[in-house]
Length: 338
Image 1 (spheres, rainbow, N blue to C red):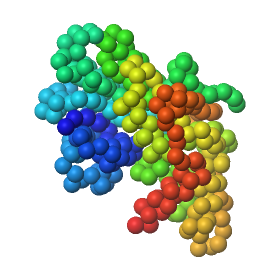
Image 2 (cartoon, one colour; image 1 turned 90 degrees about the vertical axis):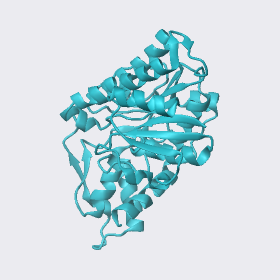
Image 3 (cartoon, rainbow, N blue to C red; image 1 turned 60 degrees about the vertical axis):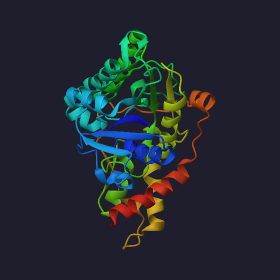
């Protein structure tokens, strides 16, 4: 039985990964470490709450003694590191938490793993040779694109917000541990995720939540900022492939090839709601769309070239945006109407 430490496994992507991974593999147990801040919710893990191979620990990735205890107690064979502060607006209002969690937190988990798995640089302890640290990052570290072009794994980091700067910093620390110590690390950079269990403050849940409440649907600026949208379960499957089969020291970009601007997202969600949950007054939900002051330093466009993970690891998205958004809206209707 192999033991995997998953950090941030009660959050949006982490919980979807935990539920998927434990359903796929019988020879792994997951030690799930989450601080249960506003972004973590134990209800996200109800599918595995009685699974003996899921061990939940409430704790902070900055708590080095706790991490050392977990590595020793559970003989951790691998780490999948989701835990992060991730909301750009919050990073603008209070950047310190992002530096602490995303930079210092990543360093702490990575360094505890190194000391547990390695005797010296490029020398693993006996039976630890295949132990791997997988770091989950974002396409926002690459900065902003113009009207054309895609982010590749060779695109230089050029972050524009405290959030993306903190994630870029964590990427660089992980990279350094491969080149300096020879640690078996892999990094994945993903595009915008959407799907079940996302925090209510994010764009798509906000559109659904405010629409159902008959409140103005807030869209930043002119609504023309473009993102590449990736259904969360497609991301989870890419993470699994990168963890199991990725090459040490490599970065893999995971994107949905589904570019949409915020106006398109809002109108699509409103159209689905019109069909599934019509307003009592008979009017379309899109009349609730309201443009608000733009976010400071709002990047114009992100888009990922996922060719590397498609070619090397045979990853392929199962959902296109039309199918994924239908599933997502139906899930949130169940949540917000329960």
